Length: 338
Picture 1 (cartoon, rainbow, N blue to C red):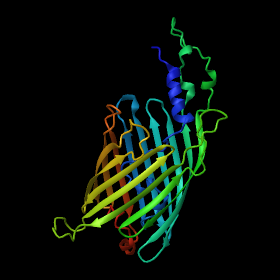
Picture 2 (picture 1 turned 120 degrees about the vertical axis):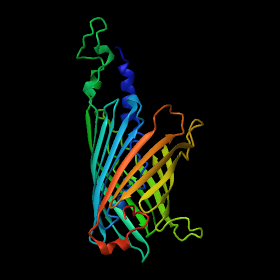
Picture 3 (picture 1 turned 30 degrees about the horizontal axis):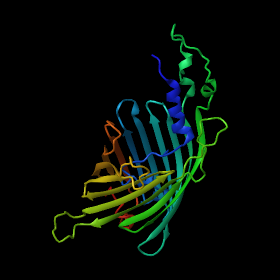
Picture 4 (picture 1 turned 180 degrees about the vertical axis):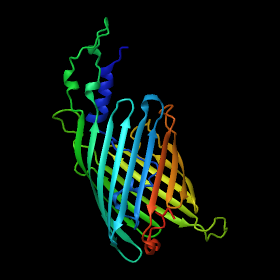
């Protein structure tokens, strides 16, 4: 079968080398795994904390994009936090793969009895891969015999780099008290080169995130409708990379062993008349089992992208408690595992 491979190749190169827009994957369940947002959450709790999340985007034929994120961190002493994270993303159609491993360090500075300031830095190694040698260009196919020719007039394309290796540096901070937090992070501070083309320089765009969350206690409300330890969680996360922007606004009810809520995804700076202000509604639920938390979310698209079958996410986080005297000091908003 003849396929317009030059058109396909043009699309691939446009996505990954010419503009490099919106490179970073975004997760719906950032409130369950805030390490995704900001290295300042490293060691946010006193004991070991770990987690995994899997995201399947647009599970409709060849458009599938799978992304995994994992982390392990803890507080060292009473001030410092150390952690490691990994991110893996792959596309079914292009076979493109993005892998990154980061080491994070945070430090807690007490502003006063209630408030803390946590600056942090994250340094990692990234690898983007795509095997150009597996491309079959149109002029390599003999239409009469079906034979495949090893050479092409676009031979230079087949000789491009298959892998990009780079060092990536990010930083952030968190300001928090026992009921809420506010922070910001800036990724790709060193603007690593992610071009697949030889002798080209395509710096990875800076990724800005400004985020916050607060937990309202509902157990003492006049109506007494809620059981003990019920909280209303409110979150917001603004993201911007190059010309693209996104604002997530979420809320959830957290009971002793169950949380459920939804996030609205907004495009606040619409760049054209065809842009959607509300792009998706994302309900989620999480179940707390001892020191474990299992979460699931589904993104309902409200845009005109067509039949995409939405976006699924499943997460698992857990905590190992060794410092019983430290429990009372922990952030109430962040505590999903009690």
